Amino acid sequence: MSKSSNSLIAFVLGAGVGTALGILFAPDTGSNTRDRLSYRLSKYKNELEELIDELVEGKELHLNEAKTEGKRVINDAKNKAENLLNDVNKLIDQINKDN
Image (tube, rainbow, N blue to C red; front, side, top):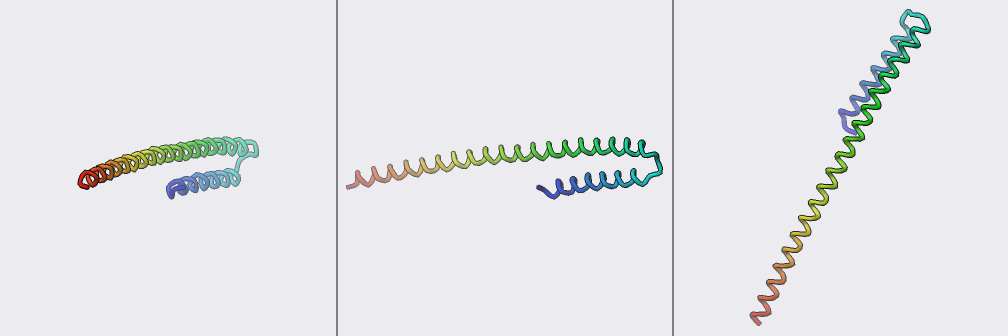
């Protein structure tokens, strides 16, 4: 995971813990506190799910880019090998003509 992803996760978790502690120690009735806590936890859960989706999409994007780059490298190597083989065959033909 990248440094920015780790920082974002730490921030979200810190905000969630801070919010939960703030609500628990705030002077309010138990039912209001539970409702507010439930609402905020639901909100943070949704944000965390979105973050996970973004990370998965990023991983898939990098995987697709790596596959594409790998195919390109293989094709380049194949073309260079074919060119080298053609050069070798031409050289062999030239040697055979000279003998």
